Length: 251
Ligand SMILES: Nc1ncnc2c1ncn2[C@@H]1O[C@H](COP(=O)(O)OP(=O)(O)O)[C@@H](O)[C@H]1O
Ligand SMILES: [Mg+2]
Image (tube, rainbow, N blue to C red; front, side):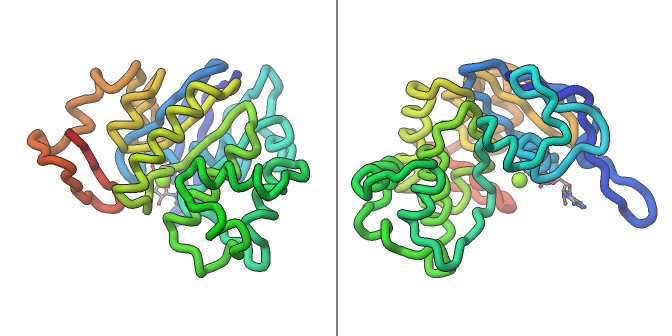
């Protein structure tokens, strides 16, 4: 369903070229829940943006349902059924949460139906539905509203860039359930960029991206255990912060 063929993304760097994504080939079948993981700066967000069409590859091709989408705009890809949730979501000053969800759903949802999507992501709907999507929302609130809009879109391919980033420990429990439900109910495929063990645990496939390349690919966490768990001894509900990545594990 989604195929990347020898995709590269180079940027100009001090007079030379720097390869952010290097000759990466990847294929994601229908109805798969794929988690992309790997170190900071490895190229994960760049890869997600290439899939969504926010940036275009400097080499290679991207196919979606056998159609070459390499040169297609974000809007055309969105209309074909690709949704994207940013690592750092965009704020829409002057737009209410209700309007944003209606825009995403592309139909006139009743307020009650729109509230359902907010409840799904653990937000008390009545407190948020009429709020503006502006700087008054915390990063975690904004992330969850963005996830709700992707749920409302219900497209064939949903790409989430670190949905757990900025989400507190309590809401994180709820978020896992959101993705578990999505995994069960969706007719399409889900790609999640994540470092979270519990999200990795529900993956059909895990793709490791490092240094712009897909270094390994496997099923579930087992084969990745050593690379994902830098701290062998976890305490109950311990939370380690490593750069901007948070490693959390419950026992
Ligand atoms: N447009 C750009 N210009 C220069 N460097 C970039 C650009 N986009 C990404 N990078 C660099 O490419 C690397 C990969 O970035 P990113 O895809 O955000 O990594 P990840 O999401 O895996 O942390 C980083 O070192 C980042 O600074
Ligand atoms: Mg990133």
